[in-house]
Image 1 (tube, one colour):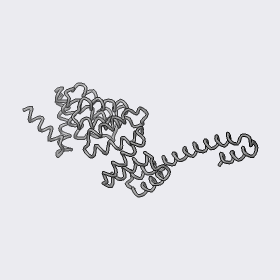
Image 2 (cartoon, helix red, strand yellow):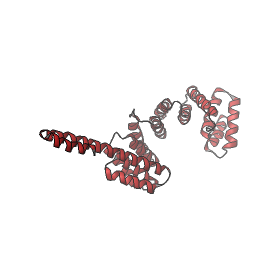
Image 3 (cartoon, helix red, strand yellow):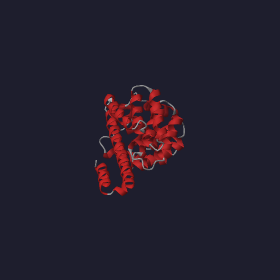
Image 4 (tube, rainbow, N blue to C red):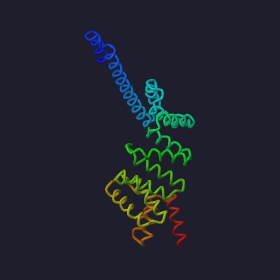
Length: 266
């Protein structure tokens, strides 16, 4: 209201400047209105995303509808709708929303991340890789470490072990030693034959696990450690990890892989 009132005051006191004053005031009002609308859209999408995380898609839809009333082409709202459609099992509608979001704003990195994850879930690995690769180039994206981790997973599934290792390593650098990234990097390096390099990252992982009660060994981390220990002839470490794998995860794929490993050695 202040800008409108300022406009009428200018008309009353300075009639000769009507045209200039009107133009400046109208422009300021438009920019203010657009900024306010974008802020409202951001708030609606943020609320919707929170509701999606809680599984309350009905409330999420309500907020996204409000956002699209303000801007029918909002990439943020469209990408969030893609999450809802995907959770409802509507893959075609989900992809349509994700593609439209990315098309409307190719620089909207979160939309690319959502789309990449969707494509990964559909088994469309090359397309997923391309979305994550594009997203990884956004140096201002706050969760860039996760983007590189997702890129690494996709590259690994495509059989690109060397490229996956590069992505996982970048993820560890950006997250300052995220346990998930360290484990994946260690495992890929073991599988690629770089056991010494894998051991360095695996040692960092173990140090992080020892400092956190929340982090526990998984079958994947145990088998990775077993393979490293076997390579360096550390029988005590190997025996300890094997015991944990056998006792805690006897039905796991990793335990079957371990039994196949020792069988081949024999």
